[in-house]
Image 1 (tube, helix red, strand yellow):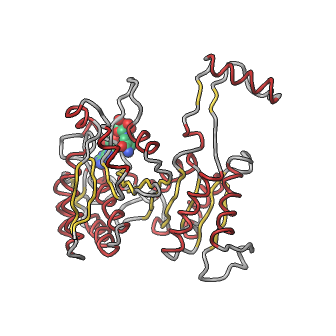
Image 2: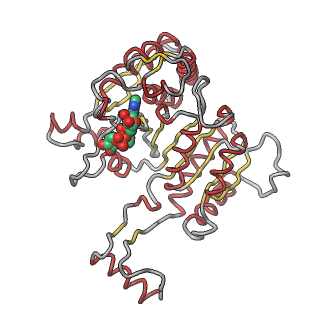
Image 3: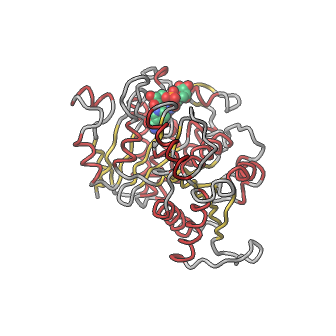
Length: 379
Ligand code: NAI
């Protein structure tokens, strides 16, 4: 059977990482199944601009609105021009509300911590609300002044300086609950021991505190969760707990083995996913997926790496691991695991791309294409 996957090449290193990655993804699937991926290219970014005059053609958006699986390389955002980030536009237009990033260690990668293998977490980050909603006004603009005057006059807020820039942090029950619901479903489906709501509700009581409460509410209302102390938890049942964000950063370093699925608002999730990826030495390898209720849109978490583009130096690992995540989502868990263990074997073989060389003792530097071939051979 042919399964359609829409793919966007991406800018900068996009072309070369795909040339290395696609054969690995196809080969992993072919080892496990007679099914094949029908790769259908969609235009976005520089390639789209050159061919259609628009960096994000309506035809691409229209196809994605009806799609169930898509995967993309990095898209550049020009600095200093008015164009908004295409990634942000895609997330908002397609309502990709959950950003999901699994974090685990690959044996052989040197890391800043002694026991990176204790980290095995999946982060669910809310993608549409919080300070990322983009409701922000620059200092001393008429909008900022008007808003400050309103807060002073209508709500008696005395703590805002006249010349402040102002941002608004909207967080809703709807937005929080659908994210936590998805994380709970994943935790139960994959037999995880715990799900942790990470928030800053001690300070921001109604936004972050709201997230915590709505998270517990959806667990109780829709999944039958019952309140108990951590000691009273029934073995084999999913434990839903919460941690204040700053404490969670300590916990991630001190007791990572006690955390499995994390559900958290946008900004906390942004910090935590990069910190955890760095903790396991995998910033350049981290895969991710942004999901709506209908579309799973996988993406390499790095950018376009313009300074090494076209030089066969880029690491295709993030896109390859995105491919594994995608295959898992499509029901090919064994093929996904095969890719991950091939990645481990490739790293253990010490022939790696230049970005990983510092983290692998006795490494030999290979190019993008060759690294892809090595992973493919290790399948
Ligand atoms: P970047 O991730 O492109 O580069 C940061 C550093 O990591 C650079 O030293 C780069 O050479 C290196 N690097 C990144 N990916 C690599 C790979 N696969 N293999 C080897 N080395 C790699 O981040 P930067 O420089 O901040 O952004 C460049 C462009 O990418 C910007 O236009 C930005 O908007 C865009 N970007 C796009 C993202 C996406 O599409 N999801 C995410 C982040 C940035």
